[in-house]
Length: 74
Image (spheres, rainbow, N blue to C red):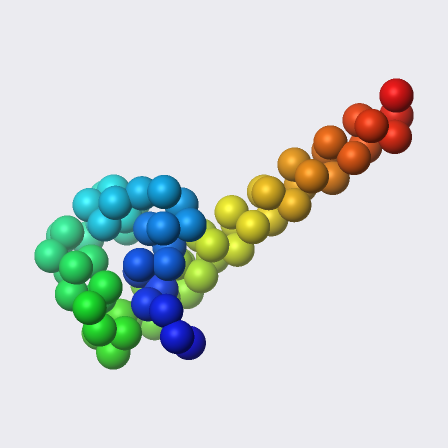
């Protein structure tokens, strides 16, 4: 996969590991451990992080479509 999903998620969402821990309702040291090793991330957490990133991407694309629609409607 290349980059660590925890680090990528925090970077893309502009949040800290502590904030991510709060969202996932897990202790912050757990997030730190996951950030240092991809082997420790439970499958469900991995999927959740992937969905967070996908949701962000879809929201950005939707905003672009809304802007395009406004331009075409004017």
